[in-house]
Length: 327
Figure 1 (cartoon, rainbow, N blue to C red):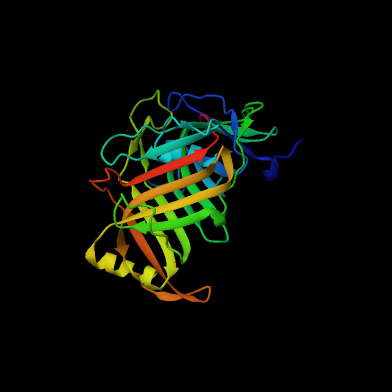
Figure 2: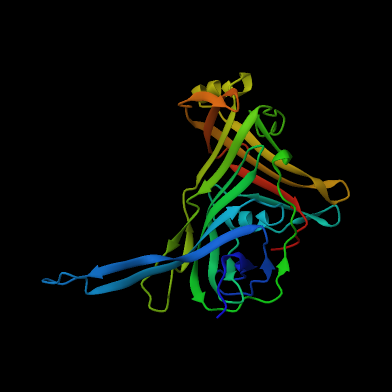
């Protein structure tokens, strides 16, 4: 018997035309680690006079996944298209593509869903309607990491993996690529660099929730519903004039327009570089409870919530430049 070894478990996905309708998982994402599984609920049944449960009655059932690892400029497109918005990229520098994604503050967003396969030649499983419901992108000068949660339906065990998937290019987002900016207006975004940033984190949570209906033809949820988004930005700075300047911002209840931008030293063509630019309108949501040592300097951490800005017309906007032509 061939053992199902952990080291050989690959993750493949395919972009669904109709959410929940299975497609070939024809893309291989070498850097993305997703562990898949099942979740659901059971109701215990125990009648009078019984010491033990008589039945465990199954109720809701859905697929789940956990994302971990380090992001790359091409692979992250699949995550952002699922949790922010699904868009058609524009051509840049002949062979490059620019993906501009903004979450609407008031209207329904069109997002990507995937058929996700995980396994090896020994055994594999898949689920449909794969969708990111939470995502965190964070970094220091040591590493840039990402994490996230997925849900799905139609979990099937014992499948055969889609043959010969296309491997996504591997251009990692390096710690040395990243800059952080904070400005007072959307027009001025990207002007004032925070020169003593020590760590940063962008977090999106509670993005979608499942719709459950009473219908024997349905084996899982039937749709995903947009939720009030838990969207935050957190960063730690040296407690110098720049870092402590956010105290005035906090006391005034004023906005800061934040840009986290990663720019690679590799090009997509001509003089255009791989890049990820994440812009946000934020307000401080908590005072720092401790100002203390970080790597030998006195440091302060500020937590901010993303908010809608009427003049800008949004709360966040992401521009991603890579060589991926389509999902």
